[in-house]
Image (cartoon, rainbow, N blue to C red):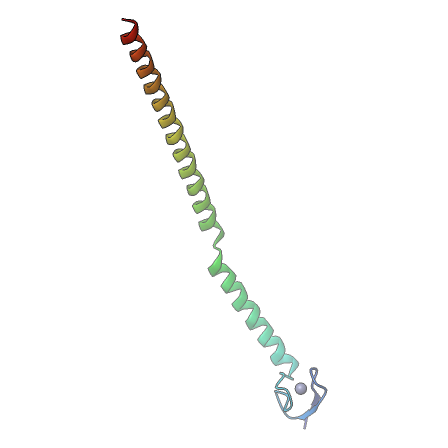
Length: 97
Ligand SMILES: [Zn+2]
């Protein structure tokens, strides 16, 4: 017969894996197994949530898109400015002519 004191509520349990009062796991070995299992699950969950290389690739890809977008907007602005300047020159030339 094995009597184990519950670490959670202090109740003595005879030949039990779980505390009869609060349900806490009493066996050190089982607690350890459960802890290892939980840690493994957590690691797996983390790996699922944030695969680093995938995120890095996505971020780089996104920055590249932003850069290209910025470049397009900038060149678009330049073209519009050039057309505006050309029209202004044209109007001036017609008015002067
Ligand atoms: Zn207990």
